[in-house]
Length: 196
Length: 196
DNA sequence: CTTTGCAGAGTGAATGTTCACTTACTTGAT
DNA sequence: ATCAAGTAAGTGAACATTCACTCTGCAAAG
Image 1: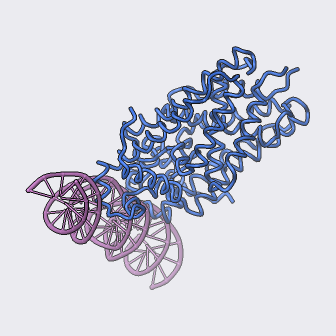
Image 2: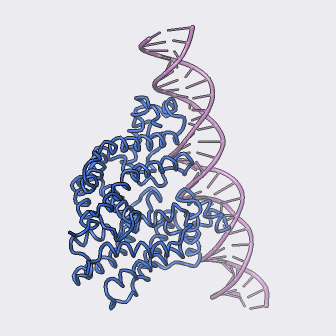
Image 3: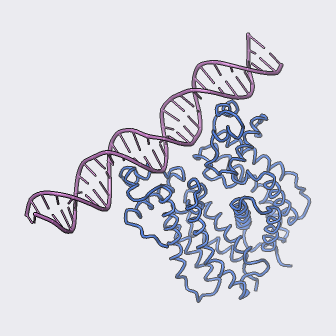
């Protein structure tokens, strides 16, 4: 359900992303959004019915972008290579769209409404959809450990990733997330790989 | 710096915790706090100078409580036992004070001020202060893996813990955190322990 | 080719609500 | 009589949203 977005709508959700980066959740107001767009507050409502719709559009756009990128990771490679590619792709994405990191945590983005929670859930599921089978395949082929379940492995990996993003964000995006991410991938792999 | 809190002040920060649980960051308003206390809004200000002070008091109280509990984990036991005790204690604490889980994420609790950030930092450091040496000792004694650095191990462990808490909270505290926590501890230990 | 009319995209001013916080007053216990 | 702890009734600021309106480009009708 990739809802079509007009040019202006795209500009607005990009501006919203920039605001999130520069001034956090509290900075994402219609007033600031209008200022960022260099037009009046009321003009926003020519393009979106409500602030909620803007946030949902942003989250949906984010999910679609990530999905699109993850979708064409070759299915032929071995699990370890796929694992690496999966996370490298994500670190690359957030490196070029740092504002969306705030949305990843997206806790208290707004008074949590039905629609927003749904959009967040979709976002999490996109990641799961691609990570889960890679881990399972790796376990079946004996390259990843079978000492704990797939779910437990995924939990640990996702937690590690989320914390990495959290640190990057609270450090105001000052360090190189692709380099640090590379290290994270390496240490996680070291931990979950079966010893030869 | 365990600032003395009056009885009323304690009641207020507990009410604040309850509000956080039931209605999230956005629900923590002076109006709601007053209603929860069966008070007028202005009465709050007899006990705290500002909302910021309430939040700081809450975070400080939280840090102190955790510190107190973690402090008397026997230093004699082996690293694995200490690791277990450390997390069991935390799961036990949050099980009896579920409202404070929200504060663990403590992101966007309020327009981030100097004092609040400081209190959050202190909270993170309490955990670090007790976890770090346990991991290091375990590595030195060869019971935990040396394949990756202490920092990387701690990162993975903390990320896993945080995500566990996040899941508990978004599940509205419906599942048994002590039981699930036990499983989490077990699978993390399985992963980080050296094979015999 | 000009006129008519309409739609898309903008405006400033105002709406009602909620927020943290203040002021002036009251009460009951020591 | 003092004073800690309460109250009612406000304040101004910020918020999302709505209102009546203007401007501009375009397409059909005369």
